[in-house]
Image (cartoon, rainbow over all chains, first blue to last red):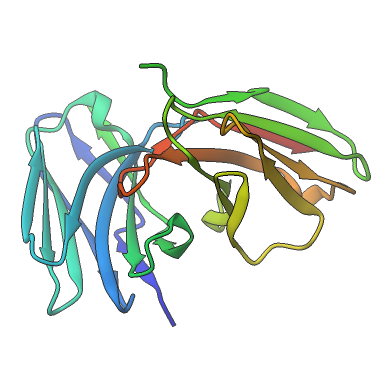
Length: 114
Length: 112
């Protein structure tokens, strides 16, 4: 069964610290993996999209890694800011081309405290 | 370029009523997908439309339906509302051949 598991479920860190969020998936055949940031009450915003051949991708202070062999991805946030407080959702796409093949994780809720 | 817009942003309905939500995609995007988001289940796929045709459908009852117009705008309808339909309904659009999806701000539906 295609699944995406994220850990931890929630995380509290102090402003300025780094953190890493994990995503494990069993989706097959794999097409791409996406990380989204969702502020409370808002729609998700894409941070990165990685295909099979990419193993790292950065977007400012956000760096995503992908190990397609172990089917694991991580999102590393450097020098966290209060505005990083949000839910981070890992989404894996199975080959098929349409958005209906997306498998969503339940997200990690990150709280950054001053 | 304007983003994805959804109307209304908030809605309160009573059990048994029906509701129609609207989504206007980014100009040039022909694919529109709808999702239901609840705290317990996360984001769940409802359906995807491309060029006025439903391309995919998620595992939701027939009370949930949708359509897409020739200008790519999309509507979803939920009939005979149940308490469990209370959720944030999100739509997302994407350009042909692109992985990237752009989400709207969502419609918060509360069923009492």
